[in-house]
Image 1 (cartoon, rainbow, N blue to C red):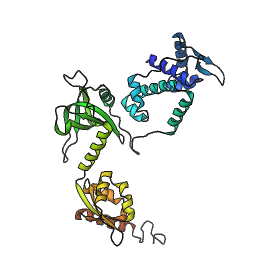
Image 2: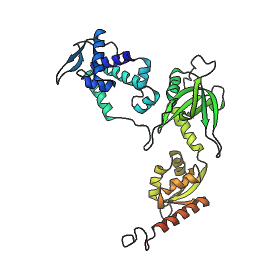
Image 3: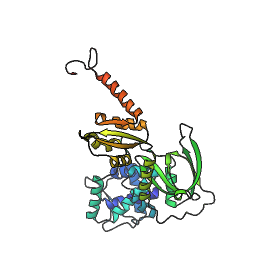
Length: 348
């Protein structure tokens, strides 16, 4: 642990000459007293660390000296590709490796290129989780990530939600974990079940539903990856197909121009694409009728209610009745009258 910290300290000083003990303490998350002790340890190891007092002082390396610690290890290089996702790195247990990799890379750059790299980091950042939602960091995620890095076949226990109101069930699967995907704050594992032939054996598991994880019996060697597998392409294709499997109800709806424009903001992308493909020409009043796929009438009610008077449900009859009932309740609630909230000239 200390050796890794000393390497980081030497790289920090090389990349940023003049760092104070306070700045190094903040970066390394240690005390200033420990910084002083670590600087002495580096000197004893032959690294010519120099310190200067005063406003222009700080730690630096002897003129012309550069460490030979800038060669990236494979794990550090791999984490560079995730460096725009700090929350993901924390969840995967890779924060320290990413920081060390960035320091090694920075130490090898010319000053002008280094300034450009630092400038881009200050200006661009990818924040994957959705608003108003705490990102999920399942307990078994780091262990599963290690299996992904090592191409290690694992046995996992997985809790499946109950169907039609039934209780959840737990299944055990031996899988080859190919990758991890962070979608709107939720982690998913893409894996192949070797003995299953349907659909190539590809399965997707929510990591927060994995309750146990361990080595697969008899699988001591890494599995051989399919060289044609691309995680991003696989995820795009499967997620789009999965979204369509959820659309089990069709709602016929008439929309104003404004409702048509706002539809993508309240309905999932796959449903919008199918709905727009079914749209007819505008009628004499400029209204467009289309068939909207939906997960259920309940979901459709919640989605289309956000469009207000810009959407009129024509079918199914039960859903239209629910909107009629909602409209009546709203009209009664906002009808001006004696004692009503907001009643009076302004309300009229």
